[in-house]
Image (cartoon, rainbow, N blue to C red):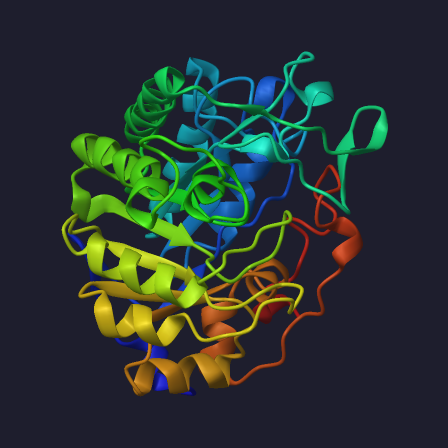
Length: 359
């Protein structure tokens, strides 16, 4: 077997994973009308059930916060029923699956949300990028600053999403605190310029994220809750004045919450911010650390063997190779990925990548 360190079992909270090759949450925009997951999504995830853990894509915790047009939700009964098709299909193949629950914040757009202005910690828009809408690509708009008295409703929305995820059969949830969406916007000082209990020093900027983690832990138990962060990533116009200090503080603070894992995006998509956030997180967080972004099987195996991380979440390589663990174990070649089909509708580039036996 190639890369044997990736095939030792790993305990996260109350789950034991058979391997350390995880499916990263990948937005694929294949939901049906009203953001309902359908049979096609169930097929996609079931194909990848050999992952140590599937972390399903960013899913709207509450209605009216669409940022990708055809992404799924978990706020309606139809969505719960739709997701049940996926969890049943994954479990039937022996897999484990968490749902990533999410609020798009300032990345949402009025054309995707019946004209509603997006909300954020501060009235600062995403710049230099555009969003896909029914009317074509459009610039992001300036968000409305959330009032302090609206924030309990956000926390309640995440908690209800966790209740619905549990009803849909998920094994746990991952709170999306990364990539310039609402919780990350509050966390990093480049997007959060507010004053009061949710702005200013790091303990205030992290307050919403931690309150959401605590709220969803009341539903699943903290041992079935993960958190994803990206303190270096500049995607969606994000920046922080001290990403290493922020990462260190957050890693220490999270020890109080006893979550199943901390999922760290180790770098910056656009290489505008440099630094090492993974090392201080590993040194200060006492739980399971999952890393993500650009790993090869060789690097992942070496990182796990050296104790730098406990597992690695693979994105595009798992997208194109539904049997990625088997390919890694065999040292087999990987299917090439087709970026043109990342967000297109239908099975092409989604459920039609061949498994090893059919290659």
